[in-house]
Image (cartoon, rainbow, N blue to C red; front, side, top):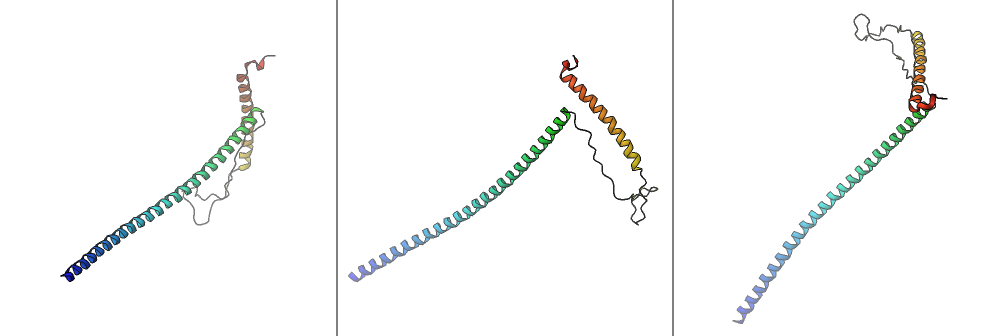
Length: 160
């Protein structure tokens, strides 16, 4: 009879041992899945931080470029105001000459592709003389306007 009790006790200990082993293995598997999820979340957050850092650097460089352009524009405006105030600036003309010959056919108005372009017959000398006369007239108008602005700014400037 004792053999039966000993056999039953050994069997009970073996079953309890197997049950404990199974619960430890399942806990280990659950913890491994938590670890994998945590590592994936960590990588995801690390990538988000890297992207935000790159965006911040890009925004900072854009802000510096904007500030530089703004200072440049402000300096140019200040120099223009100073130039107008001391009446030392003149008219600025941007002149761009077309280096290509006239490639349009004068009769049809279509683009010539066969290499037989018409020579450029525009009279640039007469245009330059007209432009110089126009500049002189514009300078006179600017001086009149500057004097008018000075008088309107200080009505007592004309009185002795």
